Length: 456
Image (cartoon, rainbow, N blue to C red; front, side, top):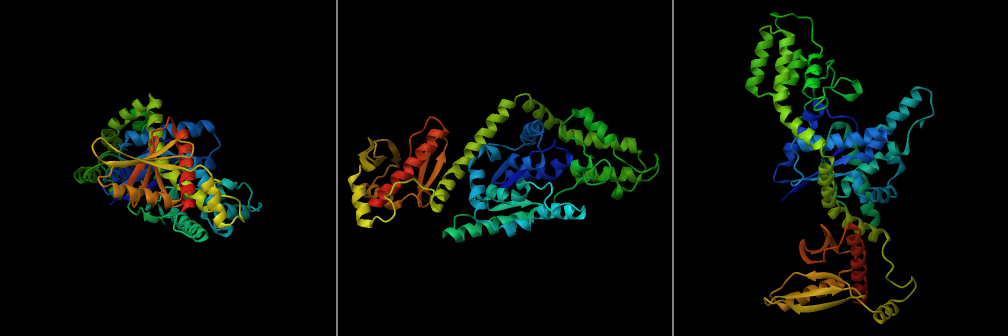
């Protein structure tokens, strides 16, 4: 059984060595596990909270997508998509907003930090605070809950957001009387490697001390490494590996044997310039093949776009039926029943007077039994799986008649719809011309199921 694991990647800035060692490399390794159903999304809606520079957002989305693909993320094994390509996410954000207590959002760390900073400066508590920053936890909850993620790997500073996502999901479940959402579990990334930057502090864009992963090519990588701050010990003087940024970075790329040899070289008094050259050559051995793939991808952005759109299609195959179920649950359903106040006998009589969806049974040339579900207007909505026993086909028809739209589990498969019962695909629609046609057909199918159930 697979565990669904979801990771968001904020699309601001250019990836550096710290991003690669701390996030990209371990995530790519985890994505190759057979027991993991991995979702990786580019959090470009979240990026809008941090940046209002369109060119920066656009460039960063391209660079980050190319970086993850060049680092070995396989879109055929995982679901890799842009947040902004999933319209169900902002829709779910609003659904969740309407059940989220304002007091919960008041306690969010990022918002409280902004308020405290304003108070310390004698400003209005909400000066410079956007609704985007305030609502960030709800958008993050929608990212997770739209796909029923089981686990979300985060650093300790993000634990609160996962706890809030659980609180919001539980509130929605309680309000609407059913377990609509899987409650996500936080996975604390205790072992995430943290690289020192050029000045010895944690490598971070906010400190302007980063070493670029691919930007500027081999030349920029070497120049950046040569700028790493060291102490004043000269050649032949022993260096302390445990206090050396060079050794910490080297160890993040090297084997145990290589690390031991570099450690001994430092103790033996290797000059800092020579040590930096050794560090550069070791990192370049890993980075060069990835950089070649990165540059090829950056030269063909259409290839990246195609991969992201394929990922969005896979993601929406889950999110679209999920949101259809939620719309129905909260009352945003198709108007297929008479107005309130009409008695149940009158409702049934009115439904029977209308032309209804219908089933048509037939037998395949190989002797198996199947049926089609047609809308009241004669459109084919579903074709059943084949059955050796006509009674089994009849029993399935009966279940579909009484199913109703809220209980129907309809998955998206490329440009078609698949009806599932008890976790198994039992019927599918024709393939539609495009996603919009498929989504429109989903609404018609749910309407047909609702009308059939009203007859029973």
